[in-house]
Length: 493
Image (cartoon, rainbow, N blue to C red):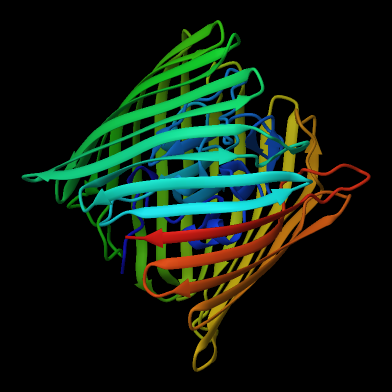
């Protein structure tokens, strides 16, 4: 039986509401900007050029576990991060201060960078939205040790409508084993222009990892965002983590206690304000009962993070658990405290939920979570539901169905309004080299949005994807749905 690792290890089964997005899902969505694709998911809403959870501030965005530099507004500009560089994403709602640190007050968007692999890749796309053209080209050259690449994007939908913006980017990643130690690094630079207005964004990271029973990771990064002749931001950080399984196993448990501990240092400048942060943290996953009647797996998770930021000392903590009553049926819950980057606002979050993956329905999964969040006067109560099924419908065809929904019972005094009900339904049929996908999104009281894609695999190296999709919140009361047509060509070599 696999022991749930702590959240610092990155593979923990979440004890808060969460949703995962695969690379295939992101591609078939028919978007060209990261904010377009990720912004479809129910509990996220647009905030300028970024996204936040349930209208609450304090949504942290990380890439491979390291936080990205926000704009001077405090929100990460996801229009500058090319979607072609993102492999997958995980979204979580609820204070994640112990796992991520100060700033993860309402939730976290965790992105994974395009992995190291053999060969190269060419991605091109063209289309239009609201009478404006869209163009994209991205070339990556690489081998088993890493890749370098660059690209150009024209257009793309933002909250309020389509644009004629131009975006250039350069990026690279490498990974090399030196004895028992793995050395890795990544770098990105992006520029956006719209007439005489320019914005620049960069992120550079370097890390070391090693260990067997006890794994250790060291990483440093520097990132920044600058509007020409305007506000700017800069984030430098260093992070060290040690994690692994101890030799201590409690009576009634079959697996030992797992621990993670570490330290983090950051210097964040937003406009004229500067915050220096030092944080120490520790987490434990404690198996209590396993392989027992009515307790197939009962694990408690506890964690604490002591943060010194903006001249103040803040204690962040979380306590939760996951109780697998019998195989395929589990309950989970968590209570946590978080704080924003400037230590000016703190909040609490609680969640309880059900996870069902019954063996008598192969390929089916269901999660239902009840979530409560509070920040100052702001109060949010919501139901988060996720259901999916994947299976064969004939000898040569597979069908995948998914449904995501969030219902806000209460959203009082939130800085930004949120829809009372938001959902996303999607069906994908795969047969031979063909895949057909259709999704329906309900986001506001104005209208829903339909997206359809057809994918064709040509040989082992070329893939075509034609899509018509709802382009973000690009509409108005007169025409609430902005349609975006896109043809993508992905070629590997």
